Image (cartoon, rainbow, N blue to C red):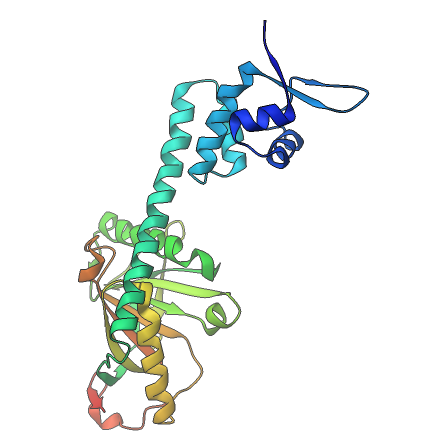
Length: 283
């Protein structure tokens, strides 16, 4: 015979608050065994203790309630394992991002005045395969990784010869409004067939102030800030998208300390005597 607990006793037994239990009832995650029709009091059985304990542990792993509901409803262990593995992979990604943010914070606090050499560069128009979408800033990392991998797979499948490192173009609206157009591309030689999200296009020429960012992109805002300061001090900044070139990056190594990224800030450049691809160092 099953034992029944009033909601307060069940709360103490499971270490789930009464408020939480009521919410779980409302969303049909953990419903009482009985409800008194006169008083409305909720009663739970001892057979529900293991379910409550599972829910508590999954919430301790920050699993969203809809995923927990799907986990409990799964009829077999394989389905439950898939949900657990997917959630753990998300946690590992979040942990890696947190660790990168902490490392970046320590680096900023310890050496906030690390100045990067800034050069002025004229980039010619370039033939490339590209993926272009309007995205939210919050999804930039996962979208960027997926786009780079898809472009590389397309280049490999079509036997395309690449003529330079992958790059990205980031519209001003992405930063100002939290949503904007992003173009990720790989320069190529010759003709490419459009497939899926990938299309062939010409990346336009650009005048840029360029600095090299070393390591994880978690603290790329430091390099952005120095480029913005350079452009403002020299009164050469213009409206336009930010450019990035991934000299060594996501497609090359998982060791983010080895990443090397050129950041390009749009400028008005008067020193065209350096030539189409020339550079001139600035203090």
